[in-house]
Image (cartoon, rainbow, N blue to C red):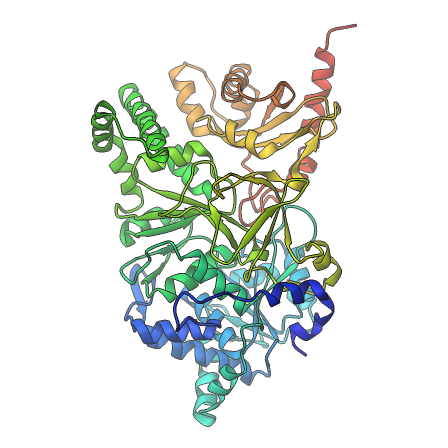
Length: 632
């Protein structure tokens, strides 16, 4: 029984959505399924370095031909284990060429792969394995398996565990990926036509993957994406970019996320030489080695790069700090004129040229020095970060989408872009704003539905088949979309005023002393903010001001530091209405993390988790404010 059959009762909404179809192809030989994408790319480009990775201190390559052959062997190896079309294979591993090869192998065999983030907690992993009915688990190494051993023991449907790294293998029901490929190669020799037969049974409407949303609230839901969903999004999202086989990308974001995974398909489709970052810690080193022309990242990456550059200038000398700040201001001015299509005055052009020599080329050098463009999504990119990087010659194109939309709904691009927006809808996607401000979308990339949840699926679609994104926004007269907040994240003060926290948080994060911020205040008299300071910048400030502060605890309790950050916030949020302004803050000693449960794997804030974890601090903020109120 296939997934599509299991969910046949999703009703007229699904029929309305799928009836719209793909639209006219961009080219006559456009692939219609993921196996077709892999095969076409291999035949067209036949690269010796299709996939590049670093092991033992050396960069190594997998050719296009090897990629196709190994993926085929993996498909047949899984078939030899008894898996058939529609069965589920979970992948719990960090980025690597093996991740892509297993993904391709699953697609060649008509199986659904189920990505599981390496950072996910045991409870969530257990839920995903049970809900998906996973029969085979692909795991990175022994250390990763040991962390989830108890979870796998509680999952009776799990038949086989396959290790990418064979070191320390001791489980009787386990095998290595090499062994799985050998089984597949043997089956290929015995039944040479089997792989083609499996491929011939794969159709665009078949579900290709089951991706469990990390979600900022509630239990993870399995998003069913078909081959048609993914292929249409890969092609249409890249329509206005001049990608070519000369481009060199560095894969940094988790392949478990549809954003990076679709990017991987786009790289392969366009014949690029894909490089995998060794780890997050090794990204700066890998950027220097690979010198990518394309870089896809979440806003947090760009925020940290800027913060590090600013700190380095501040620690060098007072003069260098002033030069850095001056150059950044010039970058903003230059970028704003570019955005508005206005000419750059001669004096500003001279300043920009000098700033380029002193500051910008070093910033570009961090990324390897030959970036053509950066693409970001997953969270809001602040206007300030956009202007700084764009003015420094690092163009960032912000897009918007969800796992449920495969993922891109809209994107800025080299042809059409606008500050403060997430671009126009991509080809074949339509967007409208509901009466309550919610963004609704329709198009070939919109998911088939949530696995095993037909009722929840119906809830996220309108009667006429449009997907409810859960985001609040607006569309300007030229068709550019502006996101104002998540619908579920809006909160109301006790005075009845609605507050959208995300835009206010973006304003506050413009402070060099602020690393992370979460606005609170639902049902309260005023909004307050939980602030994770930029401790490195505060240490530099403390040295300059001769403050004897060393530990995070000392910084967070210092009245002078609290006053500093309160003044920063007041200055940055002057444009807000009185009811929106932050009245009180609390400084947190520890960064919000995925491991701590405060962030999703895509670095979105889990607001409920933060509010629960820091409930005592929030209560203290408002209790003290109540005491400070003058007597009637």
